[in-house]
Length: 235
Image (tube, rainbow, N blue to C red):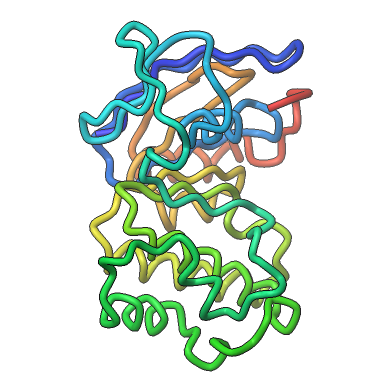
């Protein structure tokens, strides 16, 4: 269960969002600047709401009334940013292991490497990788933290067609292979349809609708809802 009830201010942009979703994979969908990434950053603990509550599977990460505001390192979340944020001086192996709990066994490491097809790149540095490979390493590093939830901020952004298809297929495999709550930020309908179970449509910092992926697929196919819009100034 994903519970969001938050209000935050970024300059002149105001975000007020409240939803509850039992979906294992929830997409935050809407045009650039509508508040998707701001919501993700608040969940991760990198933005502090003015008020509200954020909880995953009943575990409160932020609760203004209960005086709860866990620091990012204690939220047990795996976060994948658009720019990947790998350490350029470390090998792929060491990037994957960075922040990994000591309790993670070799088999778990090997399973993630196999799932994301990274075994051939373990000795390379990020500067020797393609954009798609870099994104897969970032996803693997997030998984190896053994998080209670995975946060994906536009995971296919700025990738060429082949790399985008490759990473999308690996994310599908991740969804099949890991029973892990996932929150996906996207403004691309095909990503949402492939990876989410439920979709929160966000407009101007507000929840416009919360619907199943099947309902979203039907509505977006006809009207192209929100896909190419770029209406908000910040978010």
